[in-house]
Image 1 (tube, rainbow, N blue to C red):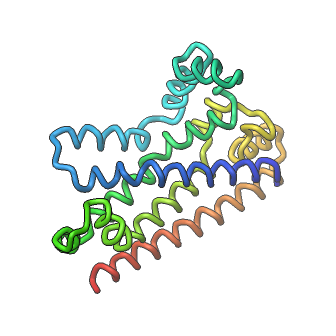
Image 2 (tube, one colour):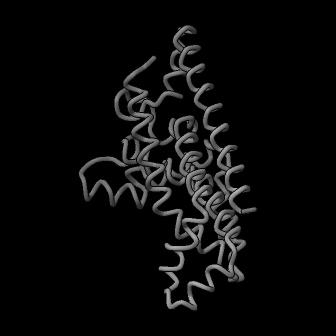
Image 3 (cartoon, rainbow, N blue to C red):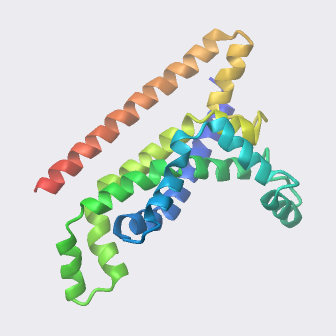
Length: 223
């Protein structure tokens, strides 16, 4: 096991999950409640990383984050460091790549909340934000937790986008998936097999937890 890569991967997954919940919550709320004619376009943009090849997304992100890219040039002028092939660039790429895994479960959860309960909160003098925080969020908590779990798990298993944007710098951008790739290339099948087995067990645990949360949400809605 590459413990340095494990620590970096967990740190990346935790930061990415936190940022996705922070940014994805208002987006999911808007998608769940909006009747704007351009909402399907926004939904398509949010879901795009699900069908776009990771290398294609990684190429465009690398172009933007590079020293000649708009974002990369601004970052370098501000910090004197390159955004591409850095941990910060890895976080940004992970947030963009995993965005639908956070937004879609929360959107479904918000849409499942009984609208009459929210309207009752309005009638009692609650503002839209207060009703959302006091009524919608508590009722949609299984979807929010699912979003966090899926975001974390998917970040742990990233490969294509991570390799394109971050490269393979030990202690900086080398994650577990890249460590497995390196071990395989070096014919160190014992190390690759052990790390792969750990990720397989982790993925199974995440899917079990997600299914349990979805079942809990169904029982919650029925009651």
